[in-house]
Image (cartoon, rainbow, N blue to C red; front, side, top):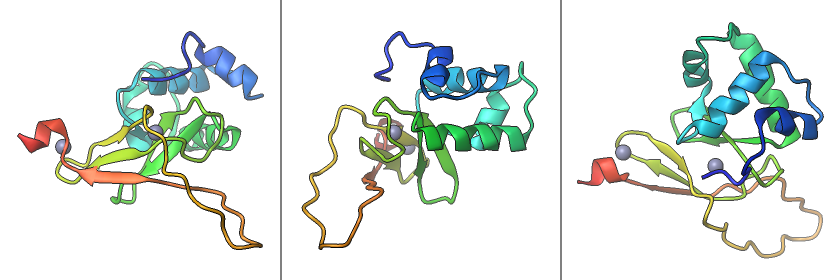
Length: 141
Ligand SMILES: [Zn+2]
Ligand SMILES: [Zn+2]
């Protein structure tokens, strides 16, 4: 589901001008293979081979966000979830689906965001987020 193709975690970090540490590579690899956006807690939980404390995971995610290689999703439970992004901006380039029943968050990379008309003069749009809420396949049956 990721548009990065054959790009490795190392090249993603290199292209973003970020230091390639074991921990960062492990987080990128994790996000590249994750089937849905992961919270910081889930990331920490899935990184058993690399010893990284919460602070360094937080700092890595923050650096990834600033570099535009990940985006984050707020699903309504005040937990940020992170996913790899192929569009190269820290804004959202695709809508996200949120299941109201189980709380699952999914990237919908095949869908474009609705075109937003011109803002009034003087306004600068920095982020545009589009969420679709409902029930996922597992919850609707
Ligand atoms: Zn669900
Ligand atoms: Zn996404």
